[in-house]
Image (cartoon, rainbow, N blue to C red):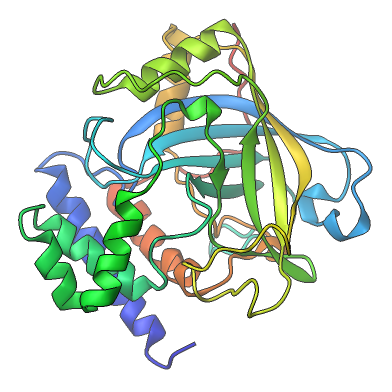
Length: 331
């Protein structure tokens, strides 16, 4: 860890908080990033039976079912149409998880969060690159390329823009795998987690409507349950599976994914009165990878930067306290 890391990350968090205020346009502030929610839903995460010893870590130590709140979102700090290029995210909050938590003041809360995006790695290798991109993007698209070259240099800027331009388009959030992209401690080792859809297999083209991704997911959940397989990809060594460089992929031929649990969002009508109430409750929550037990501690510089940035975002928008229990959505 660099000697000035905490100071730099505090400064970056302040920049994001100012951007959060600017994007609010005088209204109540939303999240600094992942501002637009597609869907908030209730579900359950059931740990797989008979896991081998290396996978029996923390809440995966024994077979049981955890209530879950799930939030699907766009990555931008602005609420923009789904046809605008953006990264898509999934945040999970498990309820009833015992153990001392990492965030000061929330040590006794019974929640555990996991955050996922649609990419197995981050486009940005370091928090410095990420903030450089956020700064330039916030000034509008007109001079994005020259500004980014000025901030990162020609080679790195073009490589980053190429990666973002080639990001796969999402036709449906129900058929998209999501990845933590950043590593976590996993007991005595480290891991990246991912959720892979377990049916339906049909992928409908994105409708192009401003809320097309939401419309698709609401319809699917009204018609039946959705299921994902939660899997872990284990650390091998620093050269093969680096912790600090978030842009380096972990090769599956050296570190395959192992199933830990199944995530199920049951059939539910999110347009009903109870569905609307549930989504409002979820939208007021905070989702933070540092809502975690020590055995699943976030790792790497990007995660350490998140610890400070998420704290500032939560304070700015006055997020709801951590929930003590889950309320199941009927119907």
